[in-house]
Image (cartoon, rainbow, N blue to C red; front, side):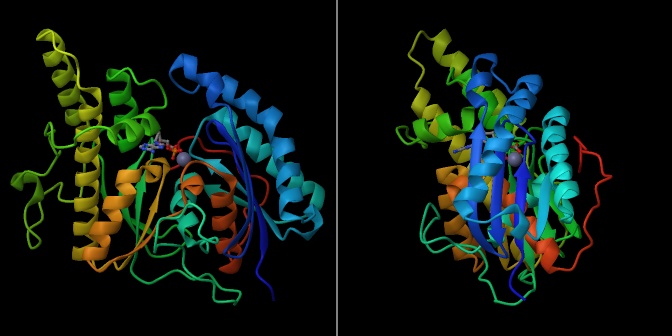
Length: 367
Ligand code: KG4
Ligand code: ZN
């Protein structure tokens, strides 16, 4: 049997995505975003996002099928993000996917958006586009089988989550090793960007500006790294693998205030670079520590912040130094898209998992 042809639909936030994969090969990834309509509000407005999905979904579907040069008839299964995300936005994708499944008789898979963010790392690397050197997905084995490495970990860094996980199976046998106890990393980027008046969304703006700054000009705190939280490998402290970013955000605000109070120009690029270094340093050091101590040898990096250039660079360096194989998705597969949904759907089909049927409801707060 050939590998399954799976169409994936993503509509959990502001991106309308349709992707098509064949097994672990990416055929197409069509994304349109309503971000421009949200920028002036400084955040995604759910009702605007839902309406934008309604406008964008059918054209995205048609474009994806045309680009992949396949018909709906040839598709083996449909996968759709069923949570977490904005309820109304999720509803548009879920209803569209159910309608397609009913109309075509194809099996339908409800997909957890967060698992898809890391599962996308299982796709085969494309001919060198966007990926970081040397890393890539797990290679296809040509057989009708999912190919999860043993001892697989996932580092999920997004606007809502910062977690290091051990993945025992692609369904949902996932163990949480560590996570943020307050803000997610992406949230910290967005809040700090606001403090620095860099606009919304803040992650990409800080990433760009940090390149012009000196990360060593200021030293911001690394949360939960004190011995009382870390403990030792034998006697781990309560937050050995956990992160905290709210103190860092406050430290940035204080720093800006000090420059302003002194009537000095705020060194925005240096602050952006030093903030980014603090985030990326503590994320990578704790993630690598957790992997080394728990025998994890392969790590999937995923989530919107995985698009960050410094995070990609330092994770590669530190994983490589620790003998851990890192799977980094290409940039365009880090932010929300349909290909990651299709990729995870294909893993479920290949694992022989039963489809979800059409009676599931979107779950905006899915764990
Ligand atoms: O995964 P995602 O698209 O949405 C969630 O599911 O949360 O992640 C969005 C987050 C935002 O906080 C955004 O600022 C951040 O990812 N982000 C970045 C970069 N690109 C997106 N953060 C840092 N550097 C980037 N280049
Ligand atoms: Zn996401």
